[in-house]
Length: 206
Image (cartoon, rainbow, N blue to C red):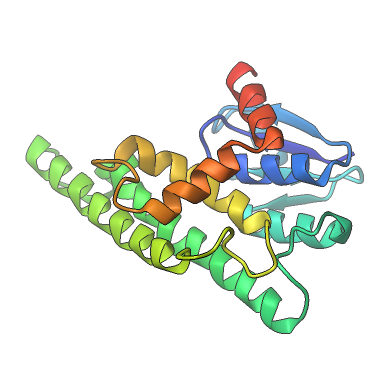
C-alpha cells in the first residue's frame, strides 16, 4: 500500500485527507523536516512525499493530489470530468501552490526576505506577508460565493488542498478568516468531516 510521509501542520495534511477520503489502505508516517528518515526517501527533505509499493516516489502536494484523484476515480475527488474540469482543477491547484502557499512564507520565515536583521525589518516582511495572504483569500472568498466546494464537481482534492492553508490563516492573519465568510464556511465544512477529524487526531497524536 502507499506510504505518505507527513509533518504535523504542513501542507502534507492535504494528501493525508485525500487518502482518508479515498478509503483504500495506506500508511502515514510522521517525519521531521530534514531528518535522516525523510532524506532517505526525499533528498530535498520536504513533505509531502508519497511512496508506492514498488518504490516509486512522488513529491509536491499538488502533484500527489492530482495523482491520487486519478488513481482512484471511484472516489470522485477529481472535481468533475472532461477537459475543462481537469483544467480548472489544475488552475486551483496552481493557485494554492503558487499564490496562497507562497504568500505565507514571509510570515513563517521572514529572514529569507530581508538582509536587515532588525526587528523593524522583520515586522515589515511579516506585514507584507499578511497583505499577500489577505489578497489571495479575498480571491478565494469571491469564488466561493454561493458554492459548497471549490470545484464544480463537488468535494475534491482541491478542498483538501485548501484546508491546511485555511488553518494557517486562522492562526496568523489578524482576525483570522472573519473577513472571508465563504472561506470560513468551507473550512468549517471540511473540519466537520469525519475523515478529516480522524486525520487531525492522528497527526496530533502521532
